Length: 134
Image (cartoon, rainbow, N blue to C red; front, side, top):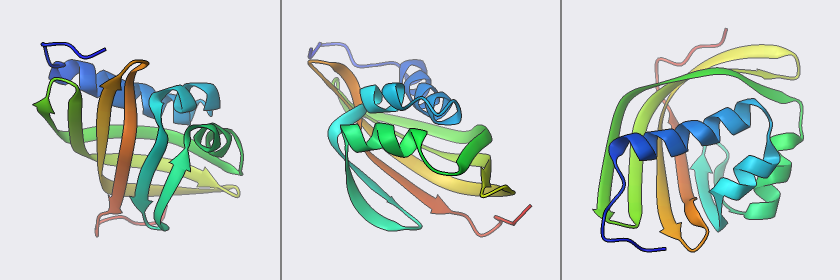
């Protein structure tokens, strides 16, 4: 579980990338595995607590697809060896109800290392003003 050595920047970027890759693949098992027991999520739809099991279902269900994404301006902070915060901008293309849309957003996630390894306990997304519909 807890170790004296904190994670590297690359390890935290890899965790975040793994989460986004699972979303792109609609792999609910993987997103649930990477999500804390109760994760806080905030964004355009407000604030909610998402249990691990619900995150898996949300990933798999619905008429949406994450077609592509690219991280930019990545910053990582590790206030303790078992807590890491990543913030970045992301350009993403989604398809919802058959319509493609491009977004530019600022995101952040808080990862905590526990008995089951690293889990995301909070994620926030803010759309940036240069976002435009495709």
